[in-house]
Length: 131
Image: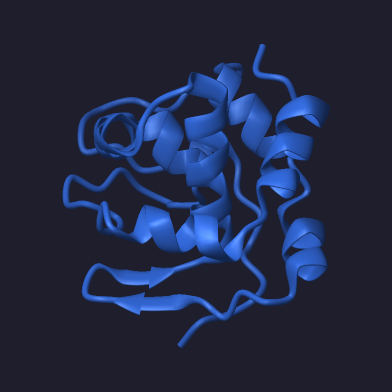
């Protein structure tokens, strides 16, 4: 069942499949802490979560994916591939541990774009630069 609120975590709480922790000073971890996820979800109000075999796709995961794509200027396939390989990007999406299996399907990216306005993604890109 989809739950609107997520417990706030730090990069140090993210579980890696190998020894070590995420660096809280990493640019993606810093960006993750700056974005007001709850406020953006409340602003959107249309997202109810998407049930998939891989689990529930939250608003944060959908919006985070579009933010990654916008900031890195990748096509869908490259964005999807980078998310599958990078624990910092998975942390930005709200996952609490690195997952090797895909967190969503490539085809879901079209659904993300249908449900989240390009204006919201562009506004976040401007207001929260990747440093």
